[in-house]
Length: 142
Image (spheres, rainbow, N blue to C red):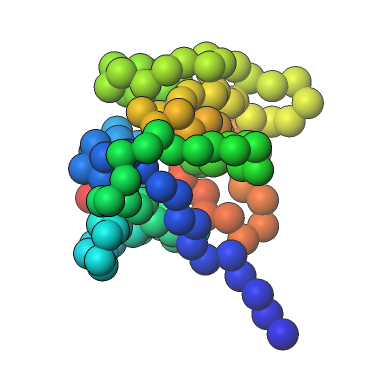
């Protein structure tokens, strides 16, 4: 038997604002959109692969998103942590930890919060990616 993590779905308060952040700022394009009764959804995925992210806006509720305590953070691998962090700051995201090269691992990482309060770790690997993870430094952008 083989199992592969495929897609994560998170609630957002404003689908279009969330799409603008994930696609326009972080550069992860929308692959599909779906409207079902009471919910608008968008699925995003890098053309280089990796997991998909599904954003869902509940149309019949304006309650704030309840983060609870089960989810800690989302990871975004990048070829340039500083540049992506700067772009997120220019877009109005909250800085939690500015980019820093870590001593324990060969990475540069930063933490930001998006407009819904999700903690996002921006991660740039300096000595190759873990097995099975697409390497942003080897992707050509057209």
